[in-house]
Image (cartoon, rainbow, N blue to C red; front, side, top):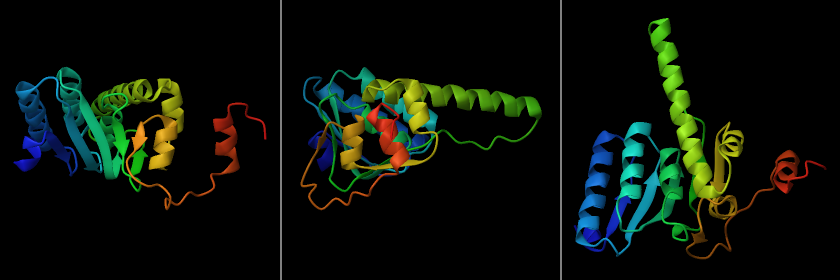
Length: 194
């Protein structure tokens, strides 16, 4: 494809095994063509399967070619993990991109012991993702856990301030900024005093 010839990988759907296999294959192919030229990954994804997403993440880390990431439209959940995992200094967002994170969810059912096993696995994967996002953004995994205890939506400017992206590509002059609740502003100031 023309995109692949230009070293562009586009994740434009939810993350599942089939999508992950395709993205991993594209990363491996482009790395085999040149391990020094960057690979540009554009992400417009609502997230999806954690295991499939981890396959993409591991491939991004394994290839020698730097992987530049760009948020287009929305990156959510696993999409945000992948966005933040791009080459430091080359993690981008378009001005009106929305970056979203939340704790891992699940709906295990069945025998009690199976539910308990599924819960522990979900907890393990959630901590793994929080560690990755923490390392990528300069925060501890506990700070990430606290920040994303509930759904959190950020515009490109907020994602940059948080450390999920490095640069915003384009004009942010018409990005709507809403006043944050006073409690959240106090927490970010670091002193906890109003």
